[in-house]
Length: 212
Image 1 (cartoon, rainbow, N blue to C red):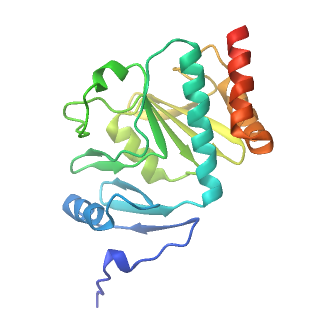
Image 2 (cartoon, rainbow, N blue to C red):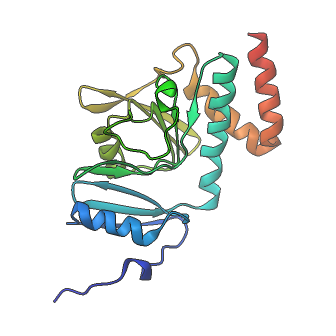
Image 3 (tube, rainbow, N blue to C red):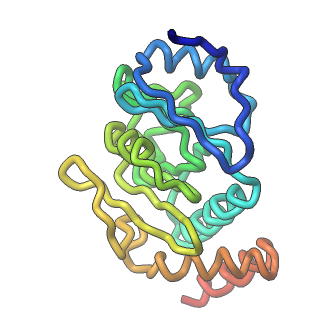
């Protein structure tokens, strides 16, 4: 006997997640509508599997710090960028995902005037950043969407995933910042922000970048 439970009746404690299998794309769209936009949970969908994650507050901080670091470096390099945060990206019938945060960099100019994300008209983000995500469903969704680079920060380590030949491979070098040792730099700066404060870390970083 099957039992139907309204999605809004499911309560996730911070730091937990739930996987739901055998969901159609329409089911996924309905769940997104039911959950609404003002929520703390993140979702990832790939070919019938839906994961709903409720991050711990302590896990929210690193990806915000990393976003500040990324923008500081881009500004120092005089490069255009747009931060699209946790926008929901969809490839209908196949995949949907909400990054912790994401950036358009190489394709920043193509996003001017974008108020309604539709990957039929706009490219996927150039960089997605996730904190403490080890979900295969999430990476499968990013693969289906064609996101060129995904950073996963977990346990004070930064892992870079580069999309090659339809799948992700781990890389010690970022294609976005090929001349910077970001796998070493980012964890150091995140820890400095936690220990000394984000604003001080950023001031010191910007001073260092001006001197290089």
